Amino acid sequence: MSSATSNRRDARRNHARLIEEAKRLFTERGIDAPLDELAARAGVGAGTVYRHFANRDALIRELYDSAIAMFHDLGPEIVDAPTGWEAIELFLERLGAWVADTPYLPALMRRVAELDPDYRPGLEFESIIDGIIERAIAEGSLRPDVTSVDLNILTNMLGSLGQFGGATLSYQPRQLRIILDGLRARPGLAPLPGAVPDFGEFHDAAHRRDLP
Image (cartoon, rainbow, N blue to C red; front, side):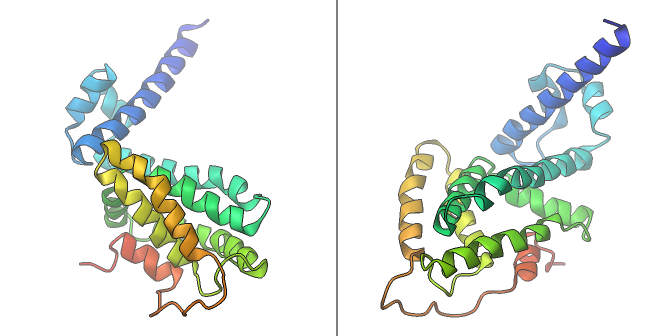
């Protein structure tokens, strides 16, 4: 093996370790935690951190992009579920668990919106979510007044358990079942009150793009 090949392999290994340790560190201490601590946790020098990420913003942007990639990876499993209702269940279960495991996500979203207000890759998922909703409504399993924004809000509600950590995460299956029972179509349902914003408005609100 050439020294160049070995160096590239070491660099990839260090990069992956830094990403994983950054997730743990930001979970514990927030996205402004010292990068020197990140280096110590990853077992590398501070210079190595900055060789991989020019600054904190570059690290934050990569973590955000990895979150978008995760949605892409989950998409086929959800879309290809045998029924529309199963797709709804998978969406809430998988994404709710991921949000719970990523308590620094709201701060990450806001920071990326500050860094690059025109960067809005999350909007590309609107059609996917609309598709599984339309499918579930057409088969008669989902109440007909549910929107893609409703599913996103419910996902965030499930994921909020991650802010408390520890044993609270074990409550998620119970809360998921309550939510799913509320989403099921059945006779005699009262219409949902109020209106929800469109997907783009909700996306921007979640990233706090509407704030100065």
